Structure formats: structure tokens, C-alpha cells
Length: 296
Image 1 (cartoon, rainbow, N blue to C red):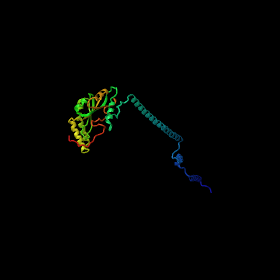
Image 2 (image 1 turned 135 degrees about the vertical axis):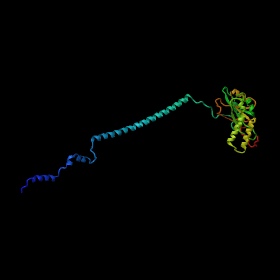
Image 3 (image 1 turned 60 degrees about the horizontal axis):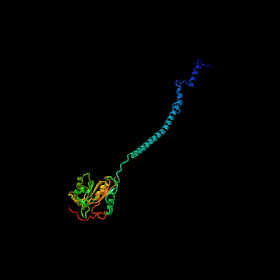
């Protein structure tokens, strides 16, 4: 059979349709297919140059951190060394200052005047006399003990005209232990005479602070205050200041039982005082405290 005219062209068109018509969309954007193939692993194209820059930046950060750590340690070590040097400098400066300006010594803090407890009276009298030996002309603090208690008005006559620093009072009552009161006084005989009244006020203040320890205690304190204010013969010692020759002269005056001097470097207020009471005959021990306390 012969083909009809034009049939060959139609068949060729049919063959073309069978092979599949061209896809305008696919043909117009071929890059989409390429892009799809490149997004299989990362989702975006890989750029070798960008990767190199990123690697260098990360390496620079690591290097900077590595450099920062030893730099911080060096700064801390430097600050510590400077602080140590400063501390050493301060210590050295204070030491040099102490050498250039040494503190003034205040004398021996354990100095005391008077006999020790249970010391033989004869031994103390010798010790007191020996303390006045020497040729120096410096003034000394010294304790003056009397043969008998004296009245406040008699204090100037028993001081040898020397500077009085303390007046010691104790009301004598047989068989009754009464308080020993020390009154510090400025220069001048008038204040020394008035020290008995000051001693009474000290006893009153002590009684008010301590209260009635027992029935006997307030009675002893009350009678002591009363007699001191009445000007009794209750002064048992003085602390005076004079040179050794002056103190030796005072020791020879009637009514003076002993004069004991401290070293010349002793400082007022830095030594203890305990007089040789007239009632101490053989040994320095307190007497009995069993007699009735008088009313006044």
C-alpha cells in the first residue's frame, strides 16, 4: 500500500511526541538541576577560599589565647614580686627608723619599794640602808617608813623638805586588819596634808563598788573612813624624791625607821610600794584579825 500524502510528516510528529515533547521549564533553567546535585551533602556550594580563611581565623584565635595565658601568669607573678618588695621595704624602713629613734625606756616594771612578805625586819633594814650607798647625784624615788604612825600635819616635818609623790595611810586598830591606802599627790605640802581626806574617799568608793562582802568588812571600812576624816595619826609612810645624800640625811632624822631608794632610772607610777608598818617587829607578816571592830 502506498502511503497517503502527508502521512510521513504526521508520523514524524507522532514519533516526536512519543519521544516526549521538550519541557520549556526544564530547558529554561538548567542551573536548577546543577544546584540540586550540589546540595546533596551541605545544602550550599563549597568554597575552598572561604574554608581557608575560616581555618586561618580559628588558628589565630587559638594562638591569641595561648599567648594570653602566659602573659596573665607573668603579670600576676610581677604583681606578687612588687608586693613582696614593697613589704620588705616597709620592714627595712621601720627597722632603720627604730635604730635612729629608739623608744625611751620606762625603767624596770618589776621595781618595788618596801619589805617582801615574810621577810625578816632586820634583813630589810640592812637592804634599805644599802640602797642609799653610792656617789651619784641623780634624784631617786625612795620609801620613808616611820617608827610610829603620824598625823597629816606632821607630814612636812617627816619629809626632809623633799618632793612628796605618795602618802600612805592605814588606820591602826589592834587585832583588826584595816586597808592600806596610797594617795598620789602633786608637789606641795598642803596637798600632802589633805591626802588623809582623799584616802577616806578612796575607801568609800571601794566599799560602794564591792558592797558588803560580809558583816565585818563594811564596819572596818566605815571606821577607817571616819578616823581618817578626823585627822587621826594614820600616816605610815611617804614616797619622796631626792638625791642619795639628801635621802641619807632624812634616814638619820628621829621618827624615821627606814629609807629605801630605787635606782635613778625608776619612773613614777611604774613601781609597787609596801611600807614597813610600825607593827612589824621581827617578820613582815599580817597580825591577827579577830578583835571586835569599834563603832568609830
